Length: 108
Image (spheres, rainbow, N blue to C red):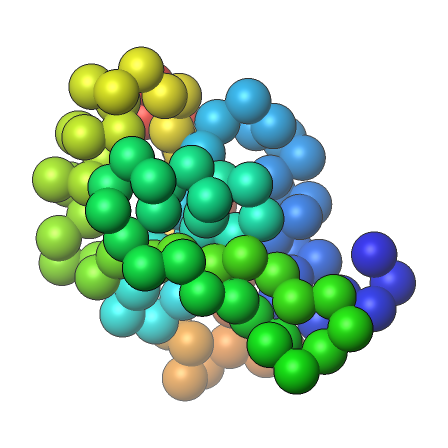
């Protein structure tokens, strides 16, 4: 995991707190899901499965949804029987010193 970017280290740290939930991680205008969560969400929600760091030696599976439509995606995941956590940015990215601070909450 030492080759992860600081943002991906932040993600994995938050994900470790909710290992049994699909984590939707706010990044700008999207909520992103990574690793196994991305694979599950892609299948359940019909999302395109892509990768982060496609040219790297360990590309990370990635799927995302627009922030303005997140409620319908959350509902579909919960109705499909998945536990879901959502992680929001809690400071303005333009004013952040380093990584944007984020907090998560469990949806179901």
